[in-house]
Length: 138
Figure 1 (cartoon, rainbow, N blue to C red):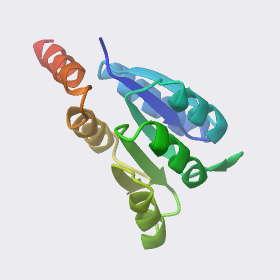
Figure 2 (spheres, rainbow, N blue to C red):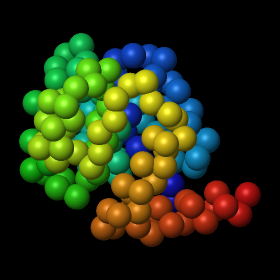
Figure 3 (tube, rainbow, N blue to C red):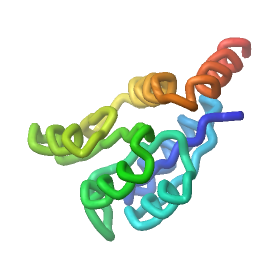
């Protein structure tokens, strides 16, 4: 079974690039351009990892993180933003994000952060290890 990544960004190009990169690495990806759908999916138990932009057309993801965290405290969340300020990074960390990085980003570094987040998450470690072993066997 592949690890499941929920990608949320209102920029179609970034969503597509992330979706392709994670798929190429053996992840199952579901992508959206809004916070409402991301929140719905997470609360329904979908995804082993969230990779999300901060500001999307319908809301700020920081407004949704408390509800997601309350229901799924172990779910790793990686936050990215073009608003690369210390305040944004601190807000992400304070909201319980596993990691934060500014846009633009290095795709390989981003995928590596996602792998580490999944490997350190209880209940997901086995799938992460299996996915990595499968990738290395190719």
